[in-house]
Amino acid sequence: MLIFDAHLDLGMNALEWNRDISRPVAEIRAREIELGLADKSDRGKNTVALPDMRRGQVGICVATMIARGYPGKSMLKSLPGFASPEIAWAMTQAQLAFYRAMEEREEMAQIVDLAGLHKYVDLWQREPSDKLPVAYILSLEGADSILTPKHLERAYAAGLRAIGPVHYGPGRYGHGTHSTGGLTAIGRELLAEMRRLGIILDATHLSDESFWEALELWDGPIWASHNNCRALVPDQRQFSDEQLKELIRRGAVIGAAFDAWMLVPGWERGKSTPESSGVSMRHVLDHIDHVCQLAGNANHAAIGTDLDGGFGREQSPGDLDTIADLQRIPGMLAERGYAAADVERIAHGNWIAFLERAWSARG
Image (tube, rainbow, N blue to C red; front, top):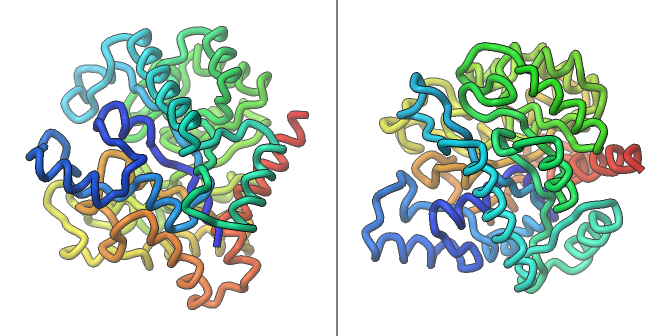
């Protein structure tokens, strides 16, 4: 079955981790172990590469550009960022160049409109193959790199179709995860420009204050690409039921993230392990099910793994080796009693339907 993963940091892994994601996960792990790399906690433990995506029929994804700005002294050690917005912009352009290189090799193909969406949905549903390109929609995680409205227009012309204004900590446009505060003045201006261009607002990582302020201002398409439920894991990074209900009311889709600390309560970074915590993909289903229960249907829950978001097997569900294991999710949903049509919605259909609505309205 086609799997649509709404959050992968493929460009970051290529540029900042120096990973050739056109090679299988096993080769990337072996190279990093052979070289003795230890600069990142997930060296030799990555889970995402294009061949493994094809093997698991993860044929469509939302791929990010990400370059956080300087987060301030209080969060600098845990949240390093680029020293200026201009440097952050340059890094996003390098990531974009990587995606273009993958397109030239037919490893990836960019989707920017409904025609492209329907083309690659049809290809992956009709004849999934290890020869097909992984199709992607370009997103920006954290908008610190957007220097001016003109830069936003340039990014849109390059195919940018969704933006999460913030990431961790305070940013130029608002406050993100584990920080307190609302949008900045230029953050409110950013939302207006996004609305004018028809760019999707990604609510992921917004602080509570920024979340509610953004929703007061925003009347366009909104999703949460990779977000779990605070009722199950009490942390500000997750959404409260009140927030989830408001997103559902607005027609949003919420992608379940696979980061272990977001799946089970009590995870301690650097101490807990998948084995010690017992975290597994069934916990992902718990978050999916919670969204479905709040909605009263399966029209708003989906997948947004973030499996390459700065961690690997050491911080993933214990029963997941690579992203190819996402192909097990449909069967697990069926075992929980989900009807076949709802399984398809969660696996890919809800993201597709969302984009059809958003892009049809854009014209």
